[in-house]
Length: 197
Image (cartoon, rainbow, N blue to C red; front, side):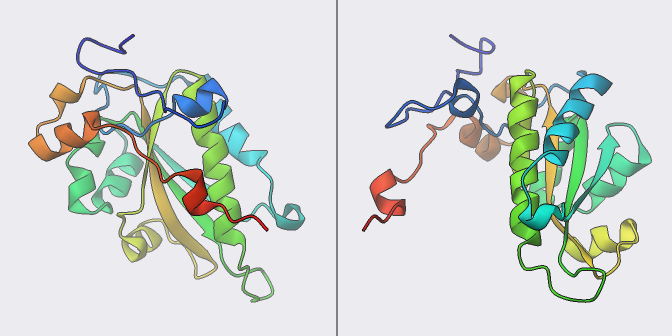
């Protein structure tokens, strides 16, 4: 089965059964520049993030959402590192994922970044279940995003999410990026990352 004539299915080869939505999730760089994400699908992804687990139910996260063609999208894109700016303009939506790293009393919230990660994982799985694709980026200009969106020191931009509809890899202009798009998916074996007593 293929997604298109040029984009093979990317289902993971797992050592034990996992949910299809997890096995089939992958992070494309080639997005359909004409596709629009419905308000329902976008809200569902954000709602999944909202209902993520968090320590003491603090929900230490915020999201800044920009749709392609808006000033918010452009501001987010301007604060990505160059290698990401090559392909992100075709995404339908860019989302800045922000962790509360200091609470209202000035105390460090050391689990804020972890909890944000869980929320973004929920967002990712929901988006994929709804037929969309997501690519997370750490290659961002943290201080640029902080300034662009007037974020105080309590809040730290951690990643940016590109969200949209996958397109064939051959639409990517950069040869290196095209090659990464179709390369086999790999993960470390469980024995390398799990310790048991």
